[in-house]
Image (cartoon, rainbow, N blue to C red; front, side):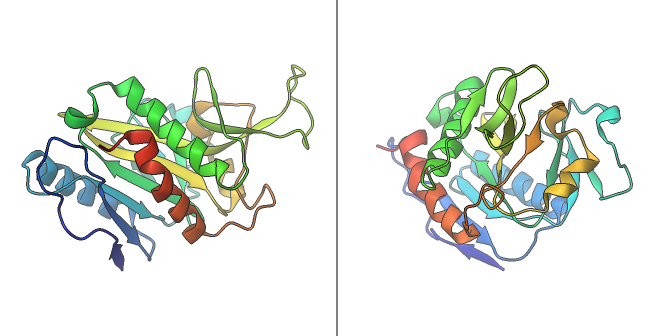
Length: 234
């Protein structure tokens, strides 16, 4: 079941409009999500539909981005593996992880892919701050990370840190696909079947793993609250 939180298409103006928001209550099979994104992006390009942010969860699965190294798929038979048609490497999706697929028009929001990825990171960081979690960027490691002083330090003596959110992007004629995945309460052992995003030596965490009883609905409210502050609206 899908919940459309903004049903009407925005009027055509020169000002940025907030996108339509849609929440899927049931788990969405990955091929169905890809097909739906393809269809919506085509509609946006044709001027027949507004931008969309789609909030959903997937059944347990792995996705392989365009840079995925087969050696990073550690347990090939554990879950289905799907080519993702996005940049990046292997990622895990499953229940308890909020996926936000953003279908946005960079023709009106700025044709700058690096700035867009940075905005996705900023959106996650501001959303996590609503729960007093300090999310951080790391040079050369796309996604959002949290420090873990409660864990043993890394082999080189640096403070341990875990990844809490992944980011993957695809662009067609300046319309975006895919987006972000924030770990609320997934089964973290499921990440063990891959090297997440090709980055070795680091862990994965979630809001509940950090001791925060955050629900998916709580996170959705925070995502909606912080969207316009990051992506702009006039």
